[in-house]
Amino acid sequence: MATPLTSPPARPPRAASGRAAMGAGFVALAATAAIAAAPGTALAQDTTLNEDNAWAVDQIQAPAAWETTQGEGVTVAVMDTGIGEHPFFEDKDVLPGYSTLSDEEDAWNDTDGHGSAVAAGVLLAAPKATILPVRLDTGQADFGGAMGESEFGAFRWAVDNGADVLVVPWILQGAEFEGEYLEVLQYAIDKGAIVVAGAGNDPGIEPGYPASVEGVVAVTGTDQNGDIWLENTTTGPEIVVAAPADAMTAPVPQFGTLGDGTELYADVYGGTSMGSGFTGGVAALTWAAHPDLDASNVIQRMIQTAGDGSGTRDDEAGYGLVNADQAVNAEDIETVEENPLGYPMGEAGASGATPDEEEDSSAAPEPGAESAGPSVAAEGNKESNLSAIIVIAAAVVLLAAAIVVWLVLRGRGRKAAAAGQSGPVGPGNGPDQTGYQQAVPANPQFGAPPGGGQNYGGPPPGPQGYSSPPSGPGFNPPGSAGEPSPWRPSDPNRR
Image (cartoon, rainbow, N blue to C red; front, side):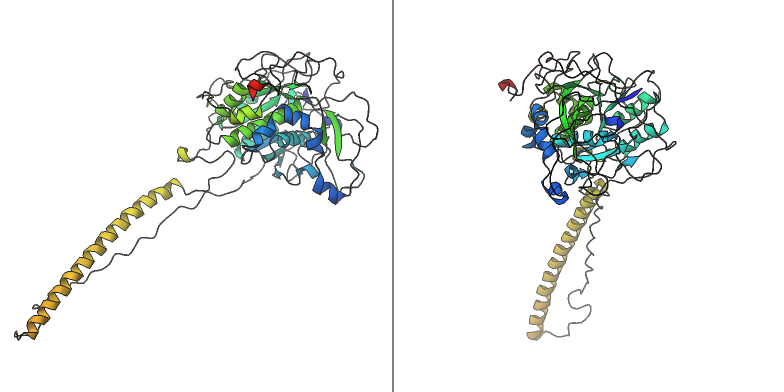
């Protein structure tokens, strides 16, 4: 069964009612104060998500990383229920994306809210990252325990259309996941992308697909104290890192005009859905700060700087709580040649796919961005044009020298005539009037910059119908704090 990784809340409502449910697939609802503002004011001044979720942003040390980068130039695909109109997204870089549903032109039709919430988590961590929404489901039904050609095709489409990081905030269980289930993840990794997936919200189960697959950054959850949330998240030997999963404020997608009675926010227990979104944001920050790295070394920076920074791993926290500050700014991180987490099919390149690299690898563009410089062919033309210019310059020098010689001889001839020498100066008697044909300068043939912008093609192969994960199983409300995480944000050894 496929399960979205956001737990339903079980806490009493606040004093004033107002925040709405977000659909069956995102069954996280609690009453709280509504925004009492005109639609235009809300659009211009909306900072609610930033303020309400500041604890999570601070826990992963994102503000310190923002002094270096905010994730610009990195594209994060959110593989979920799409995205919906909301004030929070007004000033963000969110692309049209793609929907597996045949009657939808893009992914901007999130009738559930889960995808919008996870996309917000990415942007809370990396405000200037680019979001590529991929709508796999509506949140109203279930996979039936399997993905089909539409879903596999959507994963490939995301990578082929600019995704540097894929965030998968759901799990599949109850089947043997092999064959194309592994091949599609291998394809994404072989193409140079990072796959981040939530592990689950039930401490009584093992991490589900795709978090259970080698090569995938599997995410468990922390509470507001930074402790592993053992009562409400899934752990196990597959876990790679931890990220915030406790109570948060999520955006409610808006349909029609704002102010029509639909509330803007919902209080939710974020679960590892939101944890995967925050981790995807940290990956974007890391890659934006180090655009020369490949995906394997971005993962390497994230895991070597998580937790206490020791690079050790356990079954509860993996390498520990992700640390955006350290992932972006730490020095002397040992580089790797391959994905430090392994590969879905056992080895790099097993899918047959390769990264889309520039011909000149030493001048590779930032992830998710097209090169703005001249092509390699243009550089070759520069060299040939330089040779042509040198030849022309030499010809000009020779021409000038010949003219000087001619003028000197001509002057001597005139002086001789003036002195009474016989015979006119005519052909064959005077200096040779050889003409010099100056070479035409070659026009520089600089290659045009590669085509800019994302180019979204047609739908992936296979049928375009799709049913989505059901709402997740109920969970008990948070109990006592779990075991302490390896470090606290205030630890001076980590600053």
